[in-house]
Amino acid sequence: MAEMDVYDVLKHLPQRFPLLMVDRVKVCEPGKRIVALKNVSVNEPYFPGHFPGRPIMPGVLILEAMAQAAAILVFRTVGEQPGEDGLYYYAGIDKARFRKPVVPGDQLEIEVAIIGSKRSIWKFSCAARVGGTIVAEAEILCTGRTFAAEGA
Image 1: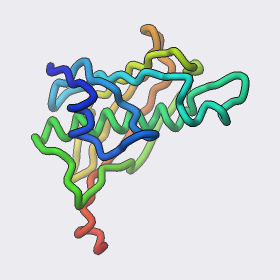
Image 2: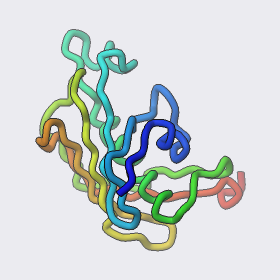
Image 3: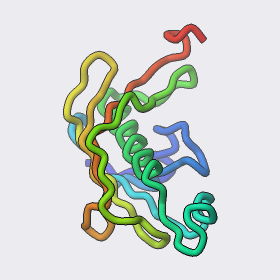
């Protein structure tokens, strides 16, 4: 149930500002679940356009935070870190629901649990909370691919 600071997070994700959506990991149980945090700041680059005068975190970025937390969980589960010759990305999103807007000043808590995996595709149950209240949930599918496997 190891905690991870932002420096550990950066070792497990290739994303960087402005698309890094995980600031810290509170709990990581390899093979089971992860609980990660995203501090939502008024300085986020998407807020001036979404929406002027009433900033709301885009739902797709909440889903991105879920996928990034899932990636950390997979890398910790298999005992690896991402390589320079591959990517870990979405294969599908099911049952996505957005219950309440996420606004500047909120701390988004993302909980991701492994439902299962087959070959290189992993399925997860995800929930995002602010102050203990669910603001979004989804089931996601993610997969890893190396560039060599795609012929690039």
